[in-house]
Image: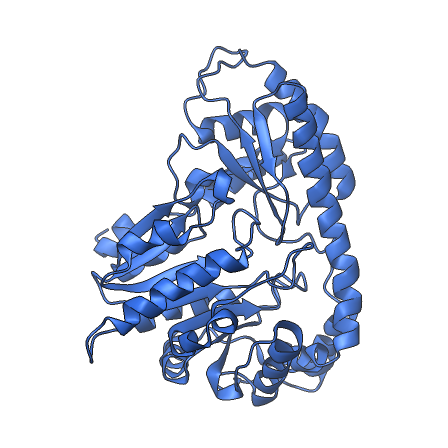
Length: 417
């Protein structure tokens, strides 16, 4: 059947491909520790009970019709207050757009700002920027990053590519690495963007920053920083991506918000409206009620964050122990989000069956088979297949699951030659 060129060339999610492999093994009766998906097992990490009850109450009050295109006004007001209270970021309700999670917001940023052929700059690894570039016909500029810089770009990495670019896509705490920008590094990048925009002619499209901070409330001993707080001159050029999906383990509740220059947000609102990608009205009503109570938000976050951090630290310490034993592994100390960046440098090694592990994907599928542990290679986030770093997501695993997987990884790696 003839389909569009876009449909013919669109790449599927590499994470879903790995997930299909895991599901097949589970169907065969195997118990796999799934560290692939950036989600939460609600039996391990349920949403706040007050939020759940507020959602039920909103449905019982018949909040089941269309919400306003830009989101319930009360929710936008409460998001404005929440941002000011929690992150010291100022955004008026007219500068805020509510949508069904962060995905339609990110897509609408691309559609609102990027024309076919426009340059979009983003670090590799990063989440889904390559796919959104493909969908919009952008000229993608990947910035390779290194473990030494916590897989985040430096100003010197970005500088050669800014001339004529339309969008710089950044994320902190970053998916897939769980690492965060240092203030000085982000300041230097912001200064470059300010200088680039000052050099452009009247009527020329400016350079925007898309700043994904969906994990901003999930940080461990490090301060979250953002562009406009550091450089107020950038207020007209930064679009933020945020919401409750990650900080409240509420991925299925589908309440996200973007905020930034009112003129851009207005265009994004029209795009989201044509997609019909609104957050459900009852969930919006409930979220507005829940987030205005700072005490209950922090009561939940304190427990939630400590449990996530304990799992991340346990996995980190397990990999460090393996490293001390001489295994070719490593890990970066967790900073934020629900991810640990781990290394398993075993390309070129041979399995007991005589198969050579040629890529990071081969290593991953070997660990799935032999250790019953599934990771996501950074190649799923835009790097080359010979980069032997992986994302480990702890949202669907208990502490006991994580403790039990380290011996299995040790045994599996010991079999390689």
